[in-house]
Image (cartoon, rainbow, N blue to C red; front, side):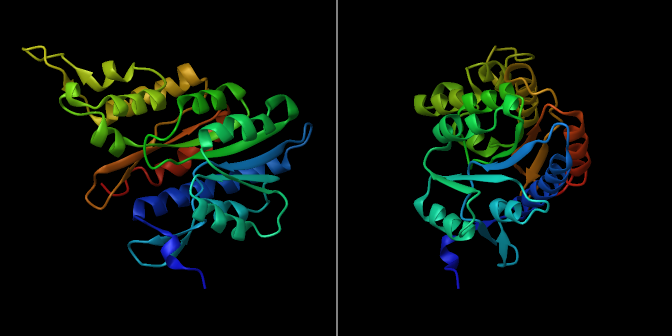
Length: 277
């Protein structure tokens, strides 16, 4: 029996996220697997893959993680690229993959691995396509990864927009007190310092002091950034993932180049958009 201590405990909002990813992965693989003239070679990429299994905080039961769900999708993806920086989780992924030669597991920083090892294998001109999951716990992602995915035109992307980490470490009411290394983390995730002018406003303030904007304002600005800077044609409104008290833990974004992909995701998102309010 697996050692349950190696699996992370997840809240019900993460279980909802896994349901969303599972539903879209099924639709994605069905559509691309059936396409002919030209045939497309479609793959699955999970950049913060985890151990493959989780423990539900609500029920205490084992919950399949996104890699396990993806491996169970029928029709299957042609290849799977699973990445984690934690050696223990990588060991669990290797056990999960077994002898499957089309499952490629990487240990290390996904920002480097994606750009150097994985994205070059899914070039648009080679009739390769990918569903990529970027699900960091916090500000651990480099904007260059997101922008590269958008410019490649071959990638559908799910992205965790970690507002809890942002609010805890960067988006303080008094921005002058934020530590430089935290600002650097935010700049790396956002791609530049333009978030400052979005997250703070002096409008309506008689004394000209910066006032922190709502999470929704920051997320809306990032949506436009995915479209206008990263180059994704289709970015529906993200789903706010809430905890048991109704507070937003993160926003789940989706980005693609295809109308069909956006339509499928919008239909899925609407079933979850008001959960936890």
